[in-house]
Image (cartoon, rainbow over all chains, first blue to last red; front, side, top):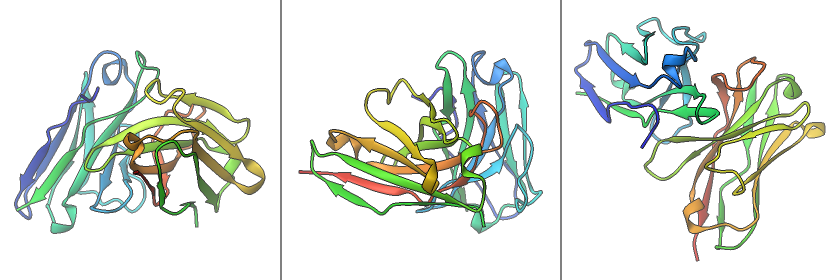
Length: 111
Length: 122
């Protein structure tokens, strides 16, 4: 059971918008620790999508965005494309565990 | 080009030892924390710990404390993850990753290695 809770799966049709949630607690997201998001395409290493809650590394398209509020964070992908089909993970720091924690991951299916 | 290149896949028997590597290039290796992440077959990402190549300062997840050893050889820009006695349950993909410029090591991982698959089977 992951410290950060993500839905196991989400889906959407091409062109639509999907949101992936990441629910934490007062010892991680709620304690103002930053949230980061990764995309993992099948058979490849994870790739950084969002760092420090809402910032995109160079090369990540602006149809990908993220936000944080209270003890939760969310990743939004608009204009869904077939190439977005992947697993997505959130990450933060947990003061109770004194270490980094990942969400359990969400599989995005493009219908 | 900034990159981390990991050693190749390994097949080992229970009880054997193993050391896998992660070589950084294209940046100042000693100035960025390196983390290790486990991904068991069909499962999610698990943070194992981080090491700072500059002084070998190490932070380890309680879940992996005593199970693995992280080390670096800064003369060759290489980080290592090692086991003294493997178990079948160690079968997984292991990734090394660079932490973004961050003084305490718990930031985002901006550069990832390609992963090293470790299979432990009798």
